Image 1 (cartoon, helix red, strand yellow):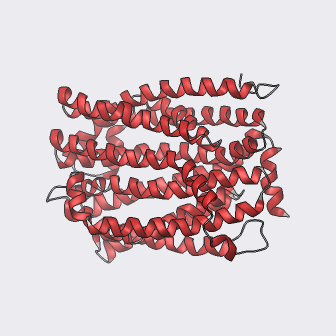
Image 2: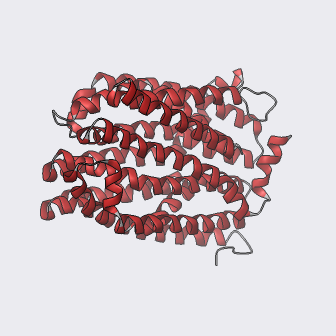
Image 3: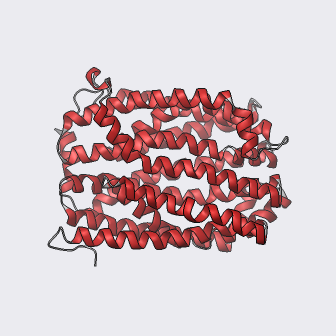
Length: 455
């Protein structure tokens, strides 16, 4: 069948071509999503105001937390699916698909109820002021009400990639972005819905593509499809999926805590506009980070399949190419962030005071940008081959062991500059940890293959 042919190529096709085949659609999808986030911020900044950007930045911890629960199910299940396909266990693969469907609904509903019950106090704790709270609350009410849709959309998209359909996963994201980008200016400028209009456009676009995803996975002519029997939760699948997904879950959860501390430091030393400056820097940095995520998503099914098939030479090779491509991308981001920060800031806002905060902040934040690609690929590599413990440790090493203490230490000495410096300092230290852990794992992998691929 066509599907079996598509999946089996992971174990026999040229690694470089396979990585490009799987990564390019993911990169396009992630870049499209990032470009939307950027244009969304531009529409909000230009159409609503500078304080609206700050209000949007206040919501980042909640957005990270929502992504954490989504990745707990989606990323873990996608890795498990790749491993099962490598073992040619299609029955279990179908069960994984059904279990993801149910788990996303459960987690999505629980998250929505919990957050909406305490939304205003949460946003105030995150650093919202009386000026930025209305914007943050307006945006998050709509986003949270649509959380189940968001979880389902991203969860099924992860399974599309893992099941050998990277292009369809890409198109789902691209079409969602196009719908989103069309509706956002309409809602903000024409219907005058403000920041709430941007949130509405996001949920509507995701719902449209979720309907398409469900229809795609309902085709029983495929090897992997939604079957009534697969909707029954399987204890082992749930346990394994959540265990593997714990790494990205903890990473996003800890990111929420970091952003809270980060925002509070910015407000203390720079005020509301400093939070808005971080929002701009974060959106721009995310453009390159998303490309790396696309590369790691392309790497994941290849590494997972071949690890499941015990083909260590191919595992090593896909890791090598992923690191090289990721380093090239973040190096480009480094050059732009260091040389053209004012031009970048001017795209988001015409507020001169806000721009003057962005420029030095961006230069500091991007100081260690060339090495973060390696760190991200390494962390996702351990996750891809079913080693969640190592991926979890790597995620926590950057966020908890280094960044969090730096955020308390540096600002007390250097003020707002210390807040910015905390990021590249943590990037440097965590990359050193990643290097050591990969070296140890690499030696183990080399011992399992007679012909080393990474030179």
